[in-house]
Length: 189
Image 1 (cartoon, rainbow, N blue to C red):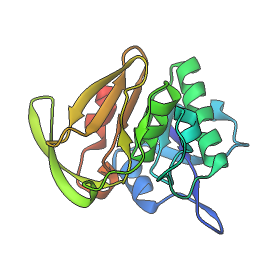
Image 2: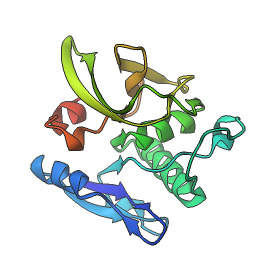
Image 3: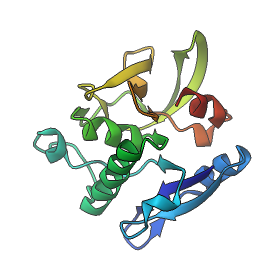
């Protein structure tokens, strides 16, 4: 399967963290990078990685804690989600990716949480406990339309969501940074 990975950017350049590439390669998947100009029909599936915060205007809030907002990244994520929805191609969102999925489907975010930055915690998913990481200061507040919660952290933050009818899955943690089997997630899609 060939994944299209949405690029992220910092002050100077576009990039994709190598950890995502290693994760896909270890699961025997090919990949290439997506910018706003990339034709999406070149890909069998999509990956929305972590990144900066989404503009709160997309979930009808004033900005009081969102950081490093980038309109181009918001547009790119929403373009990919819209295409995946229309074509029913698999989509995996990680960290910012789960948040983009939720906002696209008319959900909202908590703009700033203090208890999920640079820590590990357990989630229960499919009747098993998994130790996952947290590197985010935002999380899902109101769940988007047609999305289901598959897992929460012990303190109640949403960690895994899935679309009811489409092959769309989002995780709040970073499976690419731990020894988490990507195929477990892809099998859920």
